[in-house]
Length: 443
Image (tube, rainbow, N blue to C red; front, side):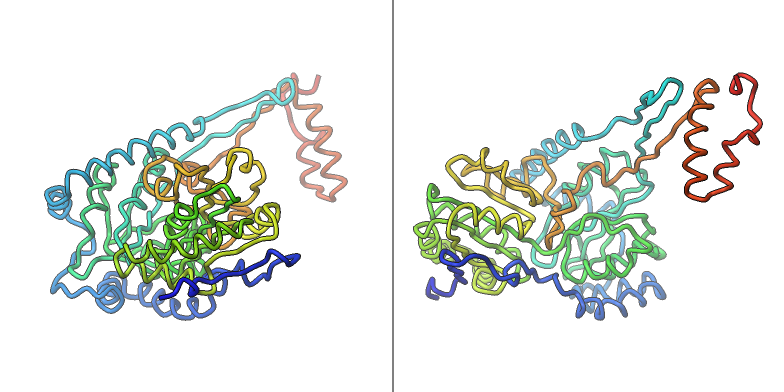
């Protein structure tokens, strides 16, 4: 296939870009919303029976029997078959991710004196129950389990479970089970897609209902989260993978092409762009992609070709680096990699991105697996208002306050004026002279 199959947008002589360039595959969920409605309803009505039905119909399970909950024997077997080098990599990643999130954890409580005698503060408490969604459709993702379960355990969530699609043999991949046990998660359930979201929203005979679900997923998962958001907190809006590789003229195009492939190989619903002000880099990347694809496994190379040759990926050449930055901020990518002469200086120009990886030694691959910061990131421009998954997503704040008898009269006087101005007689009366207070408060 010729390198000219790569989508190329030459914006070097234009004043702006088409809004179509910032669209993702999840921008219009209308089709998926309709498709998942009957799935959700069936799980609500039939529980485990529906999960087993969809395991065969949608996940392609061919095993004659399948338990919905992973058994202790399956965990033990996973440890027996996992390769030693993979075990080392999982442990290395867990250590880094745990250290990062432990540093991120807020104080259990704090309190300040806002006025003499008026104290106010927050308590930070773990959410009672959270489900971690670990996708599997285009691969196995123990890395996603690490990113979702570790902050949950650091936060101290009492009931932390994992839902993940089964393989054709009705099992969970060994890496995911190994990671779960090492992290301390005992409850792993074999269900994926919209049916998994419905299961943790309503609960089934086997899967417990949870207050929240976190983790990335396909447009079907995103659609189910949206439909069930009044029952289940859908967490960080994390859909199909997306990335921007932002460069000036300093980067080696062969390196930039390598990193452009990273997120594009997830699947044809991904989005990935090289955004550069350098024609040399743009042309060099377009040529280098063919060499890299030729050296890759066919399926992943095919996914990457489909993305980088389609509507949601390719190469964008801008008139200058300012325009490249402007496009990046408008796009608000999940992953942003800055490959410039001074990436730390350019970081200050970025307003909207889920994560920013700086320089030639920090490819997205490292961020996805082992660096420590969370790789479950907001997609579909949600980085304009949302943050990466964190310990905070597994916790809630409870504010508290106490007013001394001595401080009460002044605070009450001001509050009564607010209440009367806004027309709330009951509010006002509660802090008026009608309130029976100890004598010390009336002095």
